[in-house]
Image (cartoon, rainbow, N blue to C red):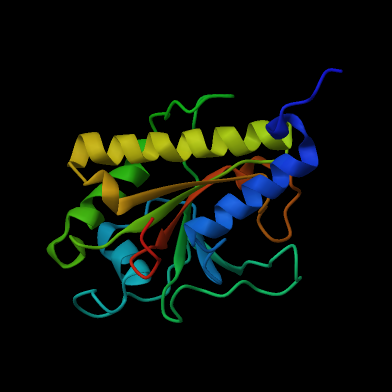
Length: 203
């Protein structure tokens, strides 16, 4: 009798993935996330992610971003932030179709991320790089692709700015967390989110 490998059985595979995600102690998303449509400055991102470490006054509210609250699919309630003052950052990082290859416009966003992580006051901070996709394609494939894309962002930051890889935690969310009020297949859901990670348990 032919047996099916454990990870090829859909229900068991999903259970294994859920257990693995829980063991990483990485929150799904910060409660408040700001989606930028233009590259934010390194200073601005630092104030959002690390408000207790930022130097200087807070900038005035920007009109080039959208702030939203994420909702847990399991409970239907907003997810809890890692820190009450911390705001997650969503960047519309563009990749080649069906690929983890960064496109030229993505570098304008990532260069500011690299500058922020290189600033003296943030040199010991860690961040979570969350990859997200739209709902076109299979769930398993989108989960894999979202993680590969987050890994591409990590590779860019480590190679161009010399960021210690241990400071960058890669997570693939796939199609599971579309933006509120958006069709899951909308391309705007393809994004990379940054969240503060220094309060997480060491992996």
